[in-house]
Length: 439
Image 1: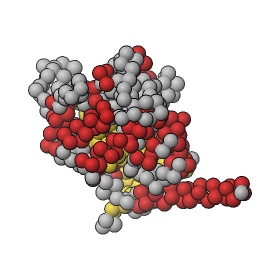
Image 2: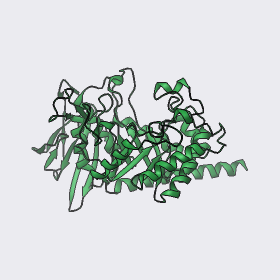
Image 3: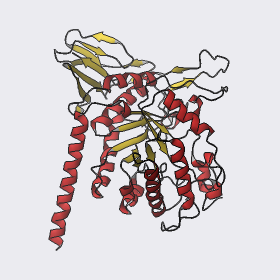
Image 4: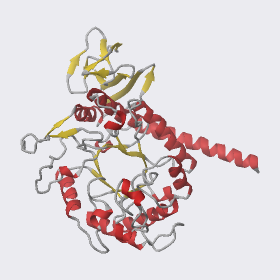
């Protein structure tokens, strides 16, 4: 019997591995949709009565938007039992419609103190407020109980969005205790109830797992939480705190492999995988202040995600001056005609969007030594190759490069900041910042 079980386990593992390989291959062979490029912004960008801190709507293209850290969380809207302040939420929906954002996702989080099972919990205060990382007070630790408070909130926001929000992510980073101080069973129960409620209101809605990693993700899958989701999510931060080294985009691939291994173990390999929050992280935590390297990291990261079969990536955060900054506000509020600056990282986001959207990555990105290449095609015979070298770096505005011999079909290349340069002598300079060779 044990031998039969072992053979069955091996077969399951092989089939899961085949499923993963097929999904990555299909992703590489599909055209990159605009929705792949997700973005998050803080509430300074919404069309509200002008304040000194108001920012214009993002000037970069947005394929998908995630509503998180947008002042639209549960505790910020549902201020008392049966009381809702939809003002800012409605403005976000109006602006995403006005600026024609193709897809909007909402992430749940922050239990109102009045509804919390531990309203004075100081653990939550590290990120939110007392009691806001705890489950509602009508859900027991084993997941039993009516869970009516949560269902009422989910129904209220699903009805309010009137079909404008298609994607619903159940809680933010529950593996961090300051975001979730409940049990895995409670969160799985809430995911189950949210799915039932939302689909009863909008049958076209799509449910996502909580974005998580490590032991908590394994435990959540083990209790069956993933069965209530159509899409698996995680957060792809690869930076290390303490200024002990800059983040490396290629480290993302190992993280994706770990998530896929958990998916395979629990029979979830056939579901899409999304990275719903990623950037180089808190700039001061890694001392990653080099603008050219920030741009290089962003471009590499988006291409490697698609190559690994991740179907959507959400950058955090467009106008956050501390974390993954793409656009920096003018510190002088008097300069209304010059509200801020799109940084090199923001320009890189814009350029790699143009490189990828509508193109097909015909094979996954490959590495030879320290040189990475990603191949793209478009209808009409267009062929391109993105290339970068991780042994090169940038400092004080100067970036080192090495000579790279190119195929004779490539006549020019595009830089990460939008210039087009003719190929001369069959060689081009390649550094940390990707370039795009074109025929």
